[in-house]
Length: 111
Image (tube, rainbow, N blue to C red; front, side, top):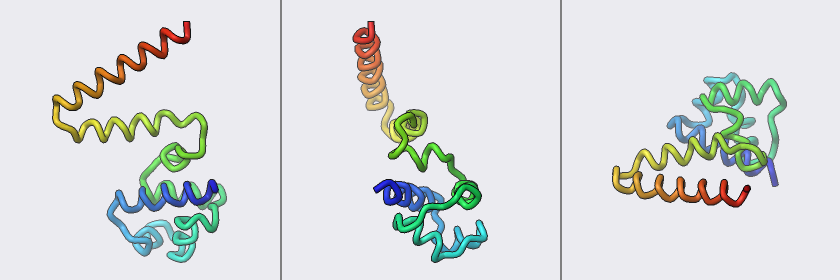
């Protein structure tokens, strides 16, 4: 179900900020109950509330919808970049070399 995946991302974004549902409610003017229902996938915010929520979470729509949109590569790439940056330099180098090789293979397959 789409709402559950989006709710999971909303919760992850809130937890990355290190804030509670109550903190987010205070920050956005939304109720704690409403935030809880969104995080559980029981409701989906309409446009105005979605914008308020995204701004309160200090995140992009792409990062929240990356699991449900077919063209959300930028958010995934950004997330992977952050994960790679947390690794030791040698591990970063190996992973980037593998990714570059895979990209080249895909380009070759497209010809």
